[in-house]
Image 1 (spheres, helix red, strand yellow):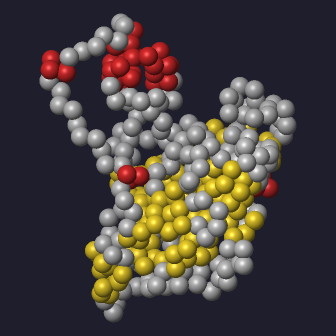
Image 2: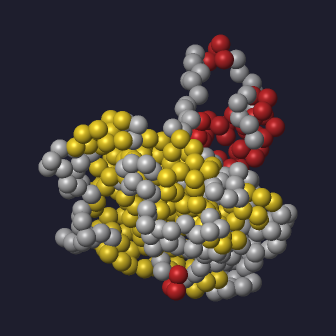
Image 3: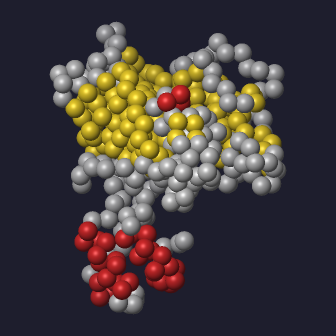
Length: 376
């Protein structure tokens, strides 16, 4: 629904009331106090009461001239900023009309002529309603491109490094100030694209929008993952509130965390990561108690958080495989871990830097201009 005028809003008043009263809207699944996150769209109690009260008395239309409120300019959204370069898939994919998932590892046409530092990447799908998610990778220069210029199936190249993830509701991946991602000379981009079942056959071509770094770069961004291993994901049929967990080492080095995001499928309802530090203290700052497969957002911290090297991460994932879950396609069958849409996953991704690995680098249009001899 459009919400840009009174006339657009008024017909949806009852639906809006129900969605905000349940805290389903605005969509924000993470937990934390006010001021903990950047771009926190959660309504305050006062804001919620104001909207509900207005609806309950009949949605009277006010006069802007009487409100003493100045309309703010529309925010600049990352998906409206023109990328510095756009790279296209080398080949299109045909999605058959069948009730089965399809995977294709797609390669893109851009090859980095030099070491390239980027500040952001935007996955641009060319078809709606058929993409479950896409993982974007930096493909190593040593990898020999297949003759078909793509790989059919759920391929995971050992000669690649995870760059970004796309899922419904997730904005473009973006680095904080003075942080960037290195694309080594000769590398190209690839994407492991997961197509959900489609009622009609159609063709799909993906593109990537690349935003080049400018100015000082002090640290390189990296992705760290906490997960429940697929073999541990066993969810009985017709059950709710199934909690599964897994514990693994988080990092051997100190990490500064900037943001986190979760990924589950139709039965997932919450993701909670607990960090056990070497000194015995715990950190429970990474909580997504209201996970939705429709809104797999990234949650940016207002203040980056230091996690000591040697810490252990325990991910607790909760699933609802009952009839009470409106997203559940079939509560009568047990669910296991896997990559298909009807399987389940439980992962939390962290955007982080290693503070000790400081760079003294200046770039222009993504190309290094100067670097001190002592940079690590």
